[in-house]
Length: 307
Image: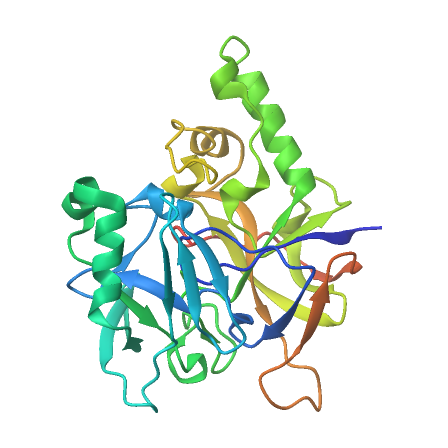
């Protein structure tokens, strides 16, 4: 029986993951997922696309929303969650062209990142600021081409959650081995962490997700918005922060291309149970059963959507 075997939360966009045994699902994603972000002087999101070493930041998010970061050199930083209601200054930020307001953390937090990552970081992204999304219900809407009514998203690239399949990863790794029979480095099997999913499902057929429309994980149902188009972040080793060459992008281009997009996994939006009010739509837990509720022709991605 298909089931949930991986559950990941990313409190700081593009930083290291947390992998709890259970998580509450809110309309804009898992509780605490991608509520913090680094931005440059113009307000544009800074991610592993610009600086792959960001994945080396270990993160702890407390129930009160505060964030504790641990850098590769062992230095730590704890930041209280700023909010507009408490008088924190606001900063207009941008993710893929969408502009919206976030609460700005104290200026010294940005300097901490520069000290940790050094001159290369400064050359690539300049001075950075740390921001917090204190009210995701009123911030950024899901793209209207994929939204059903007024649906919002956290600081993820475009959609509340991403689901990936172990069977599809196994199929992709088989392609890598076949494409590079004489190059052990390029043919090495990739871990699921390269794709930074929220939910990982085991027990499916390869690429079955291409036809999903609605699915259920445990007690929560999700509408499938689109396949997840992939970018350079998938070429970054999430344990070391190093770029590892062109794979898996070349393999996806050969074997799982949707138009111009290289797809792996799907982007989903939680559905509100009938009669349920408030922000908590349900809880997902490792071992939860996975069920496909509706299927249809495969959907088409629209650009890279991951962080």
